[in-house]
Structure formats: structure tokens, C-alpha cells
Length: 128
Image 1 (cartoon, rainbow, N blue to C red):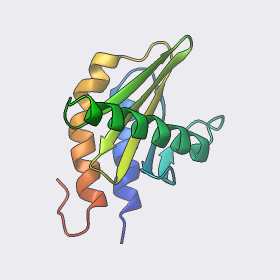
Image 2: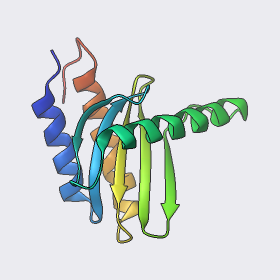
Image 3: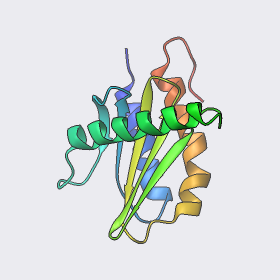
């Protein structure tokens, strides 16, 4: 059984530790949302679908170009950011941020969070 409470803690901690994070979503790679910590103006279903498409294209480009396994993509926009992180080959983490998003801090905090999230999502693994 999936521990939604543990996933919610990871999403909340990421938002609290990184300045500028406005919403977070964990989704399956097919774009189905698993859990979100998002603003009321954000539709987790839309975000999940867009992020899955983004990750799929970036993953294919990375493989075709021989760049190795994809770890993340970041969309830079005039009013904010969307960072999409691969969680293994079966899930993804989406982080939305405003113009004040601290990208350096996000890079620093995201990897350990992704490892913990992956262990929660993977049956038989013990989470850290």
C-alpha cells in the first residue's frame, strides 16, 4: 500500500526548504497524478500530463544523443519555472515556482527528496 502521508511530507518539505516553490506534484510517467501539494489555481491533472510529455521528449532526446540517463528538465518562463525530475523510469516529480525560485537550492534539495520518494513508491524498499 502506498504511503501517501510520507509522500505528502516530502512535497511539503521541498516547498518549505526552497524559496519560490509554489506547487509540487508526483505523477506516473503516463501523466496520471499520484499526489500533489499545489496552489488552488493549479490543476494537478494538467500539470501531470504536461510534465509527462516534457519528460518523455527530453528522455528520448537524451537517449538519441547519447547523453545518458535523463535526470531533469527545467522550463524557464517569464513568470516562473517548471522543473520535472525523473523518479526512476515509472514516476516523475514536478516543481512549479515563481520568478523568485531559488534554482540552486532546488537542485541541492531535489536529489535527496527524489531518492526518498522513489523508496516510498517502490514496493519492498525501506524509505530513509
